[in-house]
Length: 82
Image (cartoon, rainbow, N blue to C red; front, side, top):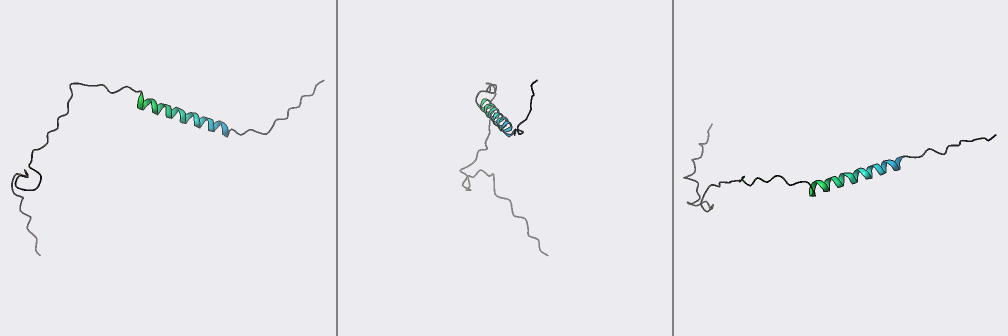
C-alpha cells in the first residue's frame, strides 16, 4: 500500500498579482486617453453659423479730445465736513 504525504509549502505572496493588475490598468487608461485625443470624431460642422463681434468705435485711446468718451468727465462728489 502507498502512503501519500501532503506537505504544503509556505504561503505565497500575491503582491506580484496586484502589481500586474495596476500596470494593466495604467496601460488601459493611457491607451484610452490616446484614443480620445487622436481618434475620436471631430465635432459636427455647421457652415451657417457665424460669430459677430461689434466693437465700439473710438479715437486713438490717448485720452485727448478724440478719445471717444462722449464729453467731459463728471464732477467729483463733494467732500463731507464734520
